Length: 124
Image (cartoon, rainbow, N blue to C red):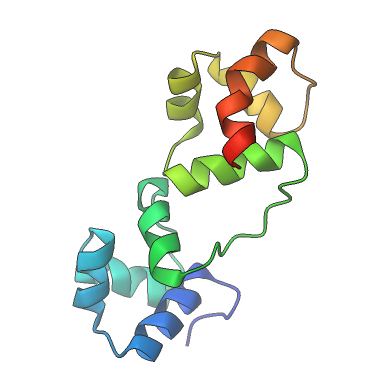
């Protein structure tokens, strides 16, 4: 039985509540039945590209992220949109290392960076 603190546990619980098979969930999320089995039973974490569909399927955001910080807002935005740090940095036109520092709350970004982060901060 999966650990109740894992994403796999939440996926399995929701799937069973809805009376769905793993292949049904796989179709909704856009992956394979075997992948769903791995997430549910072994604790393997999905790739971030699947996060938006997982959130939609679960009906809630299953990760504990402190979205009151700049870094938390960035991370939550990335998860909601299925983006890696490098993909978000490219999308925003900022340096990957700068994004990592901001997400890790290691630095207070300059105004120019904050302006580029505005879309993230507004929707997070």
